[in-house]
Image 1 (cartoon, rainbow, N blue to C red):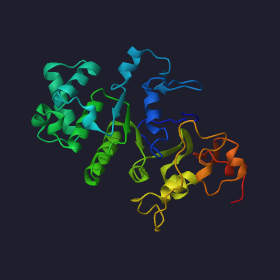
Image 2: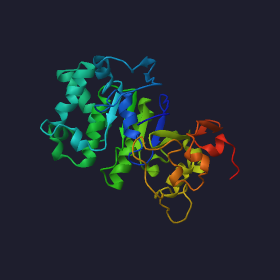
Image 3: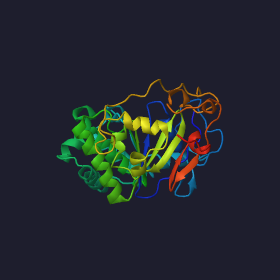
Image 4: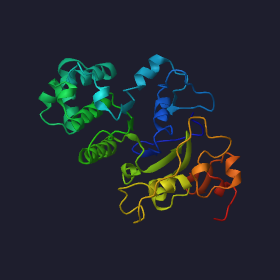
Length: 306
């Protein structure tokens, strides 16, 4: 169950959405495009706007134009998202036809440009290949090319490097960063790994148990995390050279509560080293703590002295 999640992404900006697996990151992305699973629904307080157009309540026909068009989607398992019995070039070509009306020679010319833009070589072979004939990194680049086919203004990349080795993952993140800058795209980069977000996003939104718990410019999150959960994530994250303290990694005790099982108070209270009795009975409000920096924690709402 999601609640209290509010985010804005500006043109050319990268927003990192982070938190443990199961905290609601992917569900947030799906809600943006009306792709919620069967039985899920937006119940209240909803407004999802893309370039001033309201998406909540939009027709399925209108949403289909947005999905893969104005909003490009990149998932963590490209091999599972690409059609296994259709050649890669044809799949990207179908996106070009659907969203830009391109056919024939014009379609082939743009297809070739997209494959080059995402860093694929021997593009004729790649276009003729079936997904299983490409490496994981090449599959992800093909997925990115398909996401660009609709000339998006927003890219949603949901754990885009999870299935890749470290070297290829870094290349894919560099590619997304370059495309964002060159095309002026808004990028929503979703990850459970703060090391992936570090140095690549302008702002960070931290989620826990279906709620946003901290939002700030990236430098402020890594240099001066205010929410106990964010601080615990940083302390438990390898690969944050120059950000995390040079001390042994510390795990976060306990586990994420079941969906809707956060009780009447702060969902993180049972795992938090700063928790007080009131934490188990009050859901913290969204509280500004600095310029462009806000958290959902009673220590700031009630003015604790820690």
